[in-house]
Length: 250
Image (cartoon, rainbow, N blue to C red; front, side):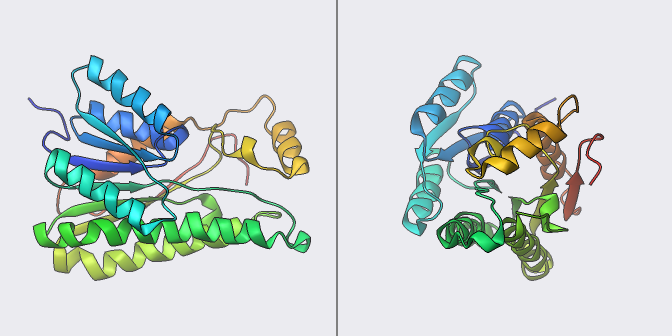
């Protein structure tokens, strides 16, 4: 019996660490040929080399999702290497949270550029081939913040609300007409480097104190959630999955 994703080709953005890395590895080990995409090429190449020792096929492609040219080059490289694209996991994201009254407009623009425009770029790049083959699966990595804002994360939450709305609309436009499935995965708190990159110190300290002794989600938990969605029967579209740690009380 073959693996669940035998013959499928996947692209995962933000694949140099955290959820993206775990997801790309999991899809590869489920039989997919995977393009690892992110800005940190050395990390991508390390993952690809690791998979090669397991006899699995993957490529690394340096990609900045804020550049449509970069994302189109990624899709071209994937199709050149593997012939097609069946799954897109649009995971790249940033979270430079701060009080809205601080007016850190550059941070707001960065979140919009990566978290919204980056998703739009990846969708635009893969959609023509998915429409042509009348199949495909677009997975966005949203957030519980896309269901309810949290203090100090107003703009970040707004970007994840946008991603949730985009995923819903994509299903309406692409599902029945083209056979393209769309899933928005909405994690709660995950143990990744994302929070550690938050520059606003009170948020980092408050989260660390609030979660002391509690269990966070791990990147592999979200990777398994993605795998569940993309291995559903072809007539099933898993539209949204909200995944939270048991210890998350909000």
